[in-house]
Length: 399
Image (tube, rainbow, N blue to C red; front, side, top):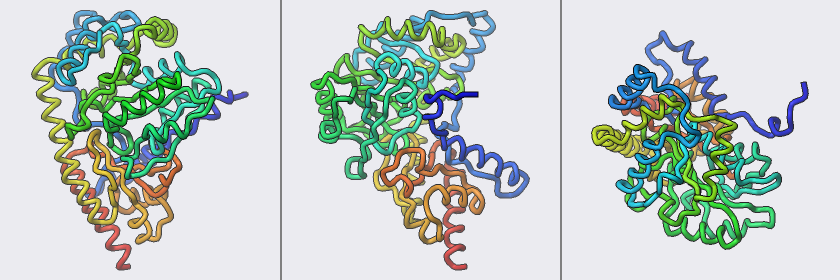
């Protein structure tokens, strides 16, 4: 069978490949007193709060399970618009919001609507691997621009200008970012958008961790800049609805009918039950619960990262959002006689029974020397993971 070149260009999602290996090992350890601790997947350990679950059940009982229009329930789009106004002080009309089958569908729709074959999209290195694969699937080419800790692992306007070529179509950013948990300074983001716009380009920004910010200086939406920003968002992270596969896209008015036409053909609509459930995300009791959980995520970050630093897994930039720790594992791996983060991740699974994600997925600018920890697990699991990693390293060094 002949496989398309498009499909062959898409590399495996190594995060999930490592997750499969971790699950297989976990089955071996399941009956032991030290089962696997999973710090490798960016999935909140919290599930949808009670009002959201109840709304889903009501929708099923009422038979509200048929197709919606491709752009989603009008009432849900209005609720999202209200959330932008109340939480971020930004006017985002409901007519510019398109409900999608997760942020993945939002990214696919945006890329298909805007990228021609051969177009180049600038992205920071490191960055979330699937984002560059959406560009590739649309026949474009992701150009990874190396970043440093001093730049918070984010692009700058100067780097965008330096990397721009006649083939460049625009930028795809993420704030807060996966894997680093860092955000782009709002003033710098404005400069980036101005540089892109001056060249006739597009600014796409992945904001799926919007709401999960711990620093007022960064907890803002890029949509405050102007109505030409294209924002991708999701109910998975702040709203704790990962498996419900529901997201949204905010686009300029002129792009709405284009995205709607694509969505009609590719997806018909997002899950109707999930849409009805998501209406309850914006109830006061639900928002209060989400804010309590945000405080818990911050407490986990504040407790876990110093433990990593103390054992030589240095986190060069304190994440200001999301739930990740991007740790330089070079010193730690060297002490153990391990080559790089890929090998370290598998050895950690076997010896410490802690699943972590190697940097291989996220780019090539020194990422082999980094691992990503997810701090979306409980405080108990994080503390136990730190103890196991420290004991493993100490035992290996003294052996």
